[in-house]
Amino acid sequence: MESGLTNGVLVPSADDKSVVGGGGVKDVYGEDSATEDQLVTPWTVSVASGYTLLRDPRHNKGLSFTEKERDAHYLRGLLPPSVSCQDLQEKKLMHNLRQYEVPLQRYIAMMDLQERNERLFYKLLIDNVEELLPVVYTPVVGEACQKYGSIFRRPQGLFISLKEKYDHRIHMLPLLAKIRLRCVYTFHFLILGKILEVLKNWPEKNIQVIVVTDGERILGLGDLGCQGMGIPVGKLSLYTALGGVRPSACLPITIDVGTNNEKLLNDEFYIGLRQKRATGQEYAELLHEFMCAVKQNYGEKILIQFEDFANHNAFELLAKYRTTHLVFNDDIQGTASVVLSGLIAALKLVGGTLADHSFLFLGAGEAGTGIAELIALEISKKTNIPVEETRKKIWLVDSKGLVVSSRKESLQHFKQPWAHEHEPVKELFDAVKAIKPSVLIGTSGVGKTFTKDVVEAMASFNEKPVIFALSNPTSQAECTAEQAYTWTQGRAIFASGSPFDPVEYNGKVFVPGQANNAYIFPGFGLGLIMSGTIRMHDDMLLAASEALACQVTEENYAKGLIYPPLTNIRDISARIAAKVAAKSYELGLASRLPRPRDLVKFAESCMYSPVYRNYL
Ligand SMILES: NC(=O)C1=CN([C@@H]2O[C@H](COP(=O)(O)OP(=O)(O)OC[C@H]3O[C@@H](n4cnc5c(N)ncnc54)[C@H](OP(=O)(O)O)[C@@H]3O)[C@@H](O)[C@H]2O)C=CC1
Ligand SMILES: CC(=O)C(=O)O
Ligand SMILES: [Mg+2]
Image (tube, rainbow, N blue to C red):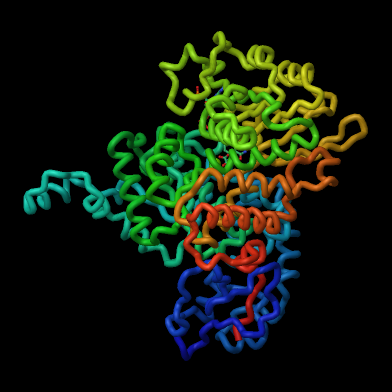
């Protein structure tokens, strides 16, 4: 029962007072549309009514359809007589969620809700962010990805596999013979595959942000192949809940090039291609076809966020596409920005400037070298010392030991700037004793690697050692909050990638911060989108770090917190968005003109509100 113009079209009422929490620039769908370039003409709108309406998650309100709406939209008898408000629905669902003892059951219940009633899903997530973030995001999303095949119900994003790749064995030869072309790999040939068609199969057209993974490095859990889809889905739900980007503008994508995970290849419930990962030219061609098709379909300003690619592809993809596309690697750049922010804030507690500190990382991959580079850049900007010099106070340990100059020849390119003069050191503990860092950062993906010896050594030469255990999910954290506080007698400034509960030590309660890129990417992305930014610049990451660090209050510091509470995340995101957009305008990279005068207010006005609309 689809309705057209004459049959129960859902149009939100003009005097809809229910819109709260920013938002309010509405289009005919009842969506916040301030970030859209063009509004859809009203007469093209056709929305379901009756039974189909109840199955349409974007518009379904369940028992909250009023008597009048039930009459107007053919819902009589399809619902029980009771009418409840959205707040009561939220109360009931939170009560139900809390009954589940198994975290994965909560995840499944949340995904079911998202597929049933999108606005209610986001209302729950926004109003209960501290309780529900660990469910839809790390740590539970990690387990969900591991079991994604078993719990798979309905697709929540696009799957693009090698099957959709342009196959030049089939297409290219006759074509080449016909037009006698020698040049094979041109842009035009590569976009003749099916990826563009696949993108067109997605029901939403006005996409503003894509989060894409190839599933090879899912959190610290390794290669989960096609089942990595939980990550783009989770990240995009945060784009909406934390950053206010409307859900219809978000597109999760998983690129399936196979998996090297034997367990999954032998799992009868595995949902991806059953083959080893494609690499080299085959991989590069698929990715190139994807990148070209995305730009062709959505235009220059589509934001593409790379997520959880393995480092041997991640750095190359970012370098290759940063000049032609609006790309952002969350693991390299978003993580760098959130950690730099935590360090800037931590200076209030530990004293000195960033340049006065020395840094040691366990893990020299995307997160480790990404953070290291942004710290070096920030110190360089603040001191006018060249970045080649500022890098010298930053040291990294990888699986083979301290990154030092004698290893330079065999190091991957992203580690080479960090290969300082030093004798080889194999173990982290020995590296800590040799370098005596004031800041220790874990980005190894390996749990329990900050042992008692390591943490005690940090406490022996620092009054307030800064210790970040960033690896996700919780099982991979380098140490727990309790260990960090106990082994340093309550002196550590601690933050972790996945959340830990507050810890009581010697009668004092310590609240660990969550150093997770979720603080940055939603506001960062909103800033890019609302300003119509066409290319990313590292100065925008620095602007985001400072915007976040500014939000930490004296009250937060008193509890040992170096990040503001997540309960205020939408306000925080609006401020991050404003600073990122301001930097973009300053650098001449913003295309939305004229520049709005008050960027914070503008950011707030762009934010999606999950409150129900009246359809009368
Ligand atoms: N909190 C947050 O916001 C974020 C957290 N992360 C987390 O960080 C972790 C790493 O991610 P990412 O940097 O992308 O991964 P990478 O695979 O790029 O890097 C991992 C690094 O850790 C090193 N390593 C692995 N095992 C050991 C070991 N036993 N001892 C010392 N070093 C080791 C690797 O060494 P080698 O190079 O020799 O193989 C590599 O340098 C993940 O758990 C991820 O979830 C990532 C992004 C954001
Ligand atoms: C948080 C994140 O992006 C990661 O662990 O990969
Ligand atoms: Mg990630």
